[in-house]
Length: 221
Image 1 (cartoon, rainbow, N blue to C red):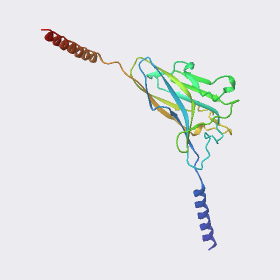
Image 2 (image 1 turned 180 degrees about the vertical axis):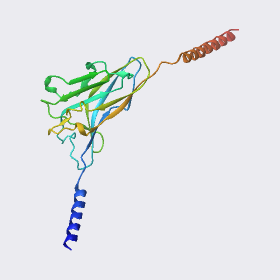
Image 3 (image 1 turned 135 degrees about the vertical axis):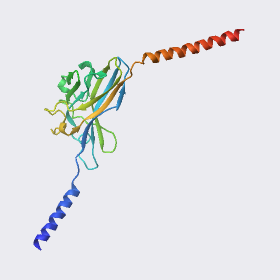
């Protein structure tokens, strides 16, 4: 009988414990658009943010009452041969709420990636803005892409700045890098029309002009 009572008591305790637990917020990188359209040899500015989502009762980092972020970091990757790339470090801009101890953001640039890290060394920890119920978003910065002369679509991915270091640090010193899921978007550059298309367009224009000329001559008689 004693064993049965202990078993029942243990089961009740486990049920109560499960019922009282709350899940922590989830984190993901997100772009400000799902697809960016840019003309050949043109530029387009891409914004990337950290998104925090949870449920009522969670402790939110990015909310105005949360601890905020002391540090931030993100890397944008794109495939070799991408239709658009970040051409130079001057095309990378951080969030001015991070003061970076007066030295500016730290940037990273390769042929297939561009990234930044930033800190609120002297400024207060940085908070996000509401983006729905129990959802907060904080901009990390912008990246200006330069398109080439080839049409097509390429996928860009927002991921942690470095797999070996932590850069997204809360005001209480906790690292979030390992908790953030990647975000993706596409960049589309229109292609040049095929020669046959130009020929067809030329024939169409010639037909319209010829028909208009015939009508003018008929009207003059």
